[in-house]
Amino acid sequence: MINKNNNEKGQSTVEFILTFAFGVSLILVIFSTSMNYATGYLVHYATFMASRVYLSSDNSLVSPMASIGDAGQKAKDAFGVYNLSIFGVPNSNFDINPVEDGMSPSQYLTVGGRTTFELTIDVMGRITGGEKLEMVSESFLGKEPVRGECVRRTCYGITGSTECNETFDVTLYDNGC
Image (tube, rainbow, N blue to C red; front, side):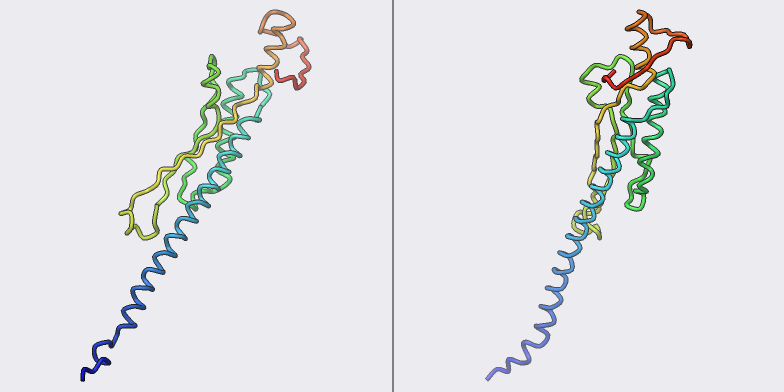
């Protein structure tokens, strides 16, 4: 008669260790994926909010291009408010696709904010070998015409010239300028 107790000692320990390792690995993969989703949503929200700042910012200068440059800086400041460096996304990765003189309508569709960043796929780097996901968040909301541009257009409509002196009084209203 064979003694089965001697051959099966430690069997439950081996099963527990294998099952535990698999279970912990699965939990870490789910945790890492959920953190990547949350980080992606937060970066996309910050990009969208910065694009909104760029869309609506105006410093009331007569020079439209100076106002647009100021709007870009305000958008970068708005992106920095979210402190995404906690999640490994530096503020320097946010960039504005600016409005430029003589843009075609197809180029104008890409005016707004853009952020590129990388996220690790798994927590321990064992499954993917340390590979990273390249993520892009874009928010192309465009740019409203600034007051200076509206003044130039109104001046041109009334006088036929875009150069108006300071005595020329222009009252602007929201007509899409």
